[in-house]
Image (cartoon, rainbow, N blue to C red; front, side, top):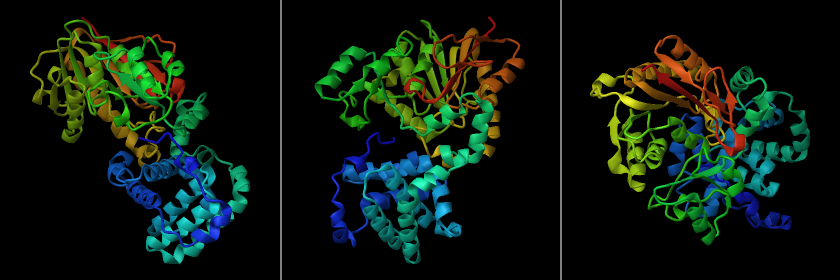
Amino acid sequence: MDSSSHPAKNKKLPPRSAKKKISKSKVSAARSAGLKALRQVFNGQSLSAVQPHTTDVLQDSRDRGLANELVNGVLRWRWQLEYFISCLLKKPLKAKDIDVQLILLMALYEMKECRTPDYAVINESVELVRKSGKKWAAGLVNAVLRNFTREKEKLITSIDDDSASYSHPQWLVEKIKADWPQHWRQIMQANNQRPAFWLRINQLQYSVEQYMGLLAEQGIEFDEAASSVWRPTADHALKLSHGIDVRLLPGFSEGALSVQDVGAQLIAELLDVREGDRVLDLCAAPGGKTCHILERYHMLDSLVAVEVDEQRMLRVSENLQRLKLGSRAELIVADARDPEKWWPGEKFHRILIDAPCSASGVIRRHPDIKTLRRDTDIEPLIRLQFEILMSAWQMLEPGGELLYVTCSIFRDENQNQIKNFLAKSADAREISIDMDWGEACEHGRQLLPGEHAADGFYYCRIKKAG
C-alpha cells in the first residue's frame, strides 16, 4: 500500500554548505530498492507482487518510506516526468537503457515533489547509474538533472497535452474523456491523489465509537467527519488521518478490524441479505467482502466463496481465520464460469459477483495500473464478465437477487455490460439503487474515484423473476 507520509519531507537534511562532504556518498538503500522495484513493474509485474521482496524488506523504516514514495511517485507521474526527459534529452534513450530512464524518473520526481536538496538527488543518481552498470551514462544523468534544476518552472508551464498534464497514457485519457465527458478532469486528478486509509471495524467485536476510543488512547488520529459522511450506508467505516502499519493498530491480529476502502464496504449493505439466505460470493479473493458479509449478516444460512486462483484463495482463508470467521464459510477453488464442476445444484438467494475488471476505478491505490494496463485488455475482460454473469444467473433462486460489482469506471464493463445482460435475460429486472452518493447510470450506479475519499466502484442490483 502506498505510504501516506512524505519521508523525504520529514527527514532532517544537511545544509547546502555540506555539498562537498557528500560528493562521494554511497547510494542509499532506498533508491537501490526503488530502482529494483520499478524495473520489475516496467517488466510487467504488479507492484503488490514486487514490493514484498524489494522495498518492504528494507530494515530502516525511513528507507522503506522513501523507497515507496519514489516508486509510487514515478508510477503516478510517469507520463509527465517522461515529458520532461524528452525535453531535456537530445535523442531518446534506447530500450536497453531502461535503468537510466528509471533513475532519471526517480530523480525528477524527487526533485519536483520532495524536499531533498537537488545536489543530493543528483549526486545519488549519478552514483546509482554507475552502480547499475551504466557508467557511460553518468555524465548524461548529471547534465539532464542539472538542466532540470534550471529549467523546472519553464518545463512545467510548457506542458500542452492532457497525457503529460494529468500523467495518464494517451489511450486512458481518451477512454475516460469518452465515458465521462463532464467528469474526466475530476477523475484523472483523483487518480493522482494518495489513497485514503479506510478501516472496516468488525462489528462482532466493536462498535465504531468503541474502536475510536482505542485509537484515541494510542494517539492514532482518525477523521470522524469524513467517516460520518458515509453513515448509515457504511456504518462501520472509519478513515484514519494518516497511513500506518496495520500491525500497530489495536486488535488487528485479533480480528478487530480490516483495511478496506469505503467503496468496497458499500457492497455488503447493497447485497441486502435476509435471515436464512444462502449466499454465493464469486471471484472472492482476497476475501474482504466475504468477511464483511459474515460480519454484517450473522443470521444467513450459509456462504460459499468461489475463487479460481488457489494462491489468492489462501488470502481469503487467512482473512477469515484472523477475523475468527473461518467456520462460517465454504471455500471452493473453481472457475465461476463452470459451475457443473463444483455446484451441487441448490440455488442461492443472494449472489455477489465482484467481477474481474480493468481496475480503472482504483488507480490512485494501485498506480502501477497506468503502466500495466493496455486498451487491448478491456474486450477480453468484458467477455469474461458476461460469461460469469450468465453462469451465476442459473444458480440464483427465483425471487433472489444478484449484485454485480466492478472497481472500474468504464461503461463497457459496467452499464453497457448490464444492458446486454438484461436484453438476453427475460427473467431479470434491475433494482434501482437510490443513494445520495455516486452517479446514476442508465443501469446501476457509479461511484467515481475520490468522491468523499472513496475509490471508484460500479454497482448494479438485479432481481430474478419469482
